[in-house]
Amino acid sequence: MAKVQTLRKMWVGGKYVEASTGKTIAVINPATETILDYVPSATRADTEKAIRFANEAHPSWKRISGVARSEMLHEVANRIKEMKEELARTLTLEGGKPLKENRDEIDWVAACFHYYAEVGRSYRGRLIPPIESSQISMVVKEPYGVVVCIVPWNYPLLLAAWKAAPALAAGNTVIIKPSSLTP
Image (tube, rainbow, N blue to C red):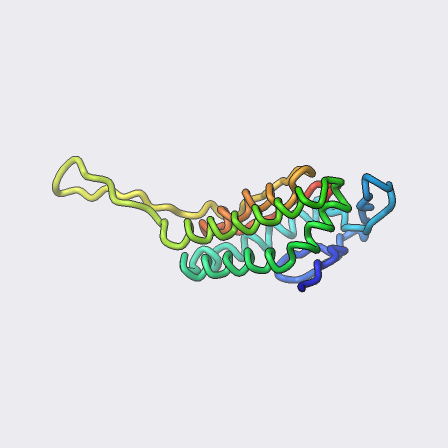
């Protein structure tokens, strides 16, 4: 079974980095009020750095074919399923919901990534019946660029997936800002 990565650093630009100030936020178990771990406390400079990297990555990410992005999103879903038990236990420790509910959340997260993997595989636009026979009317779907996903505490992985999976499938790059209660 895969091991959940403790996020004592931020994932920015394809690597783990410290917060610029080195400050952290304690992640507290609401049932016992014990500290589970510490996560980085990002500053404005850290946020601007993440935005810069996401903007720089966007041109190459949007050029990846829908089929290739689909395969990557299916891989994300498969890895989430492999890590189901550990992820569910971590969610229970940091959020306080029953383990059964968190197991369901992990299943929904994986299903979300599988769903958007298929939606993004080939949906790039459509032809619309023209008004005149000499015209062509098309809807072409283009990615926005960088999508920021601000995630609340109550369903941290599912609500992140509902935002990140469609954005990634559409060719956008993503920055996720988790709740400090359930990072």
